[in-house]
Length: 46
Image 1: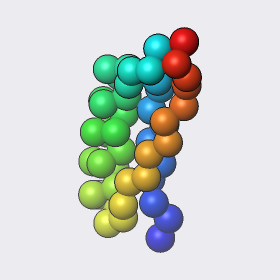
Image 2 (image 1 turned 180 degrees about the vertical axis):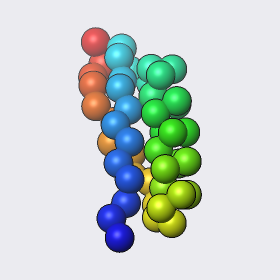
Image 3 (image 1 turned 45 degrees about the vertical axis):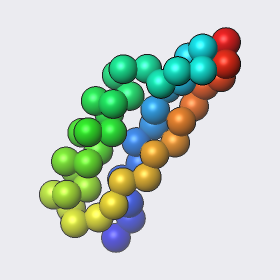
Image 4 (image 1 turned 90 degrees about the vertical axis):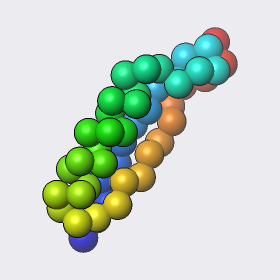
């Protein structure tokens, strides 16, 4: 089975707080499906 992908947002070099919620939700989905979570951080320094 495929993993669950969580996309995290980075602004000004910092992880946006909503990204933590996204990863947490992905963890719940992955647990229910019996698979893993992968995360991709998108954004930049400015």
